[in-house]
Amino acid sequence: MKILVTGIGGPTPRSIASVLRRAYPDASVVGADCDPRALGFYMPGLLDERYVVPRTSDAESYFRVINKILGKEKIDLAIVQPESEVLAWGDYYQRCKSYPCPVVMPPLSHSKALVDKARMADLLDGTTYIPKTLSITVSEPRKTEVQDQVGYPCWIRAATGSGGAGSLKLNCEEDLDAWLLVHPDIAEFTVSEFLPGKHLANQMLYLEGKLQLNAGLECVEYVMANVAPSRVTGNTSFGRLLNDERLLSFCEEVMDFIVKKLSTPAHGVYSFDLKLDSSGRPKVTEINVRHMAYTGILAKCGADFVSATVDYLRSGVVRDEPVRHRYASDFVFLRDVDIEPLVLSEADLSSEIVHA
Figure 1 (cartoon, rainbow, N blue to C red):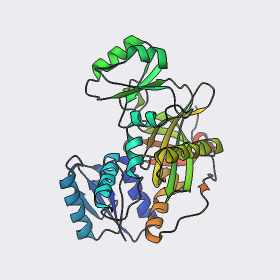
Figure 2 (figure 1 turned 120 degrees about the horizontal axis):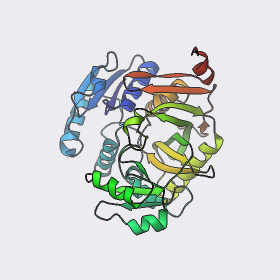
Figure 3 (figure 1 turned 30 degrees about the horizontal axis):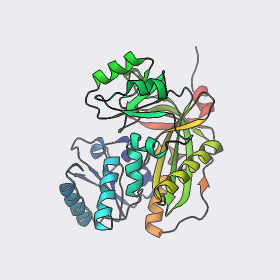
């Protein structure tokens, strides 16, 4: 079996490739990325073959090279990870009525509605699933509406991109003015009510409209948080894996709403970021149409979304009843920039340290 993993320079695709190595030791893993300096190309033992591909902004060249790789390597299936490529592959399917090779990803209508946080807010507008949210731009800051409809303090972030992009807690209108001044290159922002509670995350796999696997966690601290004005970056340095039925049920309820609103069955991996409001109620802050960065950690703890995807593409079998994953231990994880994540129990976290 030969598996193509795209975006191999990113931490999530590298994690996926590592899971494939453990779960399918006889498989060949082929990596692709638009950056010839992508870290995954150079990690010993991670890949069998490596290919630099064009950016998806040049779709014709991108798919010409992708199709050449698929034919040369005789690729059996692909795991497409960066959302720019998920969108591109979805558009390819729309035009050609098939994917370049077997792959599991959300339908294009889902991807377009969820990748852009402003469009996601429009989709979920009028529900209790999201915080009060407005879309603004540098040229149209909508200051009166921010004050009257959202209020201060509030949270601003880039409408597209990773969780920490362009993010800051705004305490007053002057903060808004200053933040827009230093970010003229960001095309659109979302401004939402400030949520003071815990940061939760959740990942679900749907196949042919049926939920297959659902697992959750809490993000506690962030990699290089001290360099971000918001103290929040796109990567978690310390987190806890949660057996939280309320979290799992809530995300399923949101997906049921999305499916009904878009009139299209769910299919693929959907990754939620959520914050708790002042009353402890979960609110969705973003939904990604790809594996989240912790997918390798989830696999180590029994919630293996990567293998579930591969096994479906090989067998076509869809489980009738979903698995709401319950972790066998009180797992926590530690992550940093230049080292593989560590998974251990909460008890181990303190027992390993000698306190002076």
